[in-house]
Amino acid sequence: MSFGYYGKDGDDQPLPAPGPQNYQFQHIQNEDGEYIRKQLKRRACDFHTNATLDVESRLLRSCPPSSEGSSLHRSILPQPSYTRFLSLSRSSLPSYSPRSGSATGLQSFPGNPALCYLTHQTAILKAKVPTAVTCCAWTPGGRRLLTGSGGGEFCLWDGATLGFELVMSAHDGPFRSMQWSPNGNFLISTSARGNLKYWSASIAPVVSLDAHDESSINEVSFSPTSNKFVTCGDDRAVNVFDFESTKMERTLKGHGWDVKACQWHPAASLVASGGKDNLVKLWDPRSGANLATLYGHKSTVTKVAWSPNGNWLISGSRDHMIKMYDIRSMKELCSLKGHYKEITSMQWHPFQESVFCSGGMDGTVLFWNVGPKGTTEPTARVNFAHDMAVWDLKWHPLGHSLASASNDKTTKVWCRPLLGSIPPPAA
Image 1 (cartoon, rainbow, N blue to C red):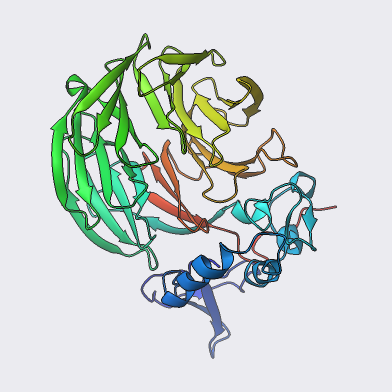
Image 2 (cartoon, rainbow, N blue to C red; image 1 turned 90 degrees about the horizontal axis):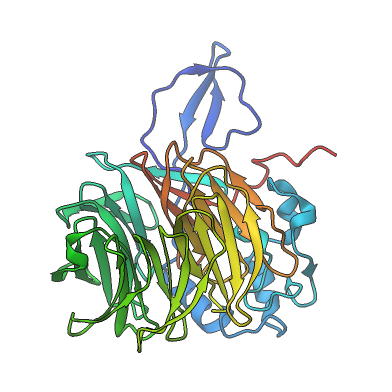
């Protein structure tokens, strides 16, 4: 499924004969033999109806890939035979087992990882007062999309129609990051002026506090239980807070320069951080001890991200490289090279544990598959997805669409290419 195209009916204008790749307009020939182009209003695919949510929670998630419920997956998800219409190399796609209904060796999410390569632009979202969009986040149910701007304003967009709903002032300075708690009850946002705020599920302000000596708070990450969260800033510190009391419990000191990224492990008491000192550090948030230091990068570490299974850690840097580590053996698994400028954002797919996406300073968005049938080369690429740096990437909770926030003052939503919209590669 993909979102449709939305817009007001445009004025009729003569055009040349319709091309085979045009799916957003209808061409009608008038009495004079000229082709008239009319915009189409396509219906939205609402993924939040009661029937859809019931199927997802009661059937899809309860059926293991090898059970009889796998036939349901094949009836809902497109067949992998359609991958020939995508702009992908067939040799890079994982093998598919029709009997099990899943990719060979990947049992966590039935289907083919190629379904996660979202290279079709669905919508461009721009606020009334355009400013750089520094971060974004889907609400836990996916009904809304939140964006934070360089002017410190929240923008709220409808998750189905992608229409504008609300704008409100949130911070005195530019947004730096935002994240929902795992239980979905609260949102935390941070700013470049050292301010941190709690927001309720209805986007109402709850608590405001200052941290990191009023320096930029670059990232925030929740613990799996939602009781703690960790922040990092340009004061070289990684701070652990208690959510209920809003008090800082301890400071993790060890970085020699600004700390640009931090992420709490999805299932354990473990924190990863990366900074301007080119280092990736692993911490015990309970004792504050530095458990390990990874020396893989040659320049500033801009982003770190844990895989959903908790076994892999990826880090992006200004040296244009993405490093992947296995924390069980504390070894570097591979180096992923595909960006031509520094990496500014990374995000794992919510279900497909071997797929993640990354954004660069040059506006490029890449998709990677690091599973058993994966490759160290990007499996899908969107060149010039934005005109400037891609500051944030967030998957929809259902994994069918991707939001990208950029310094070019726009937020874009991506989905899988329409069938036939991209011709197959020449033999």
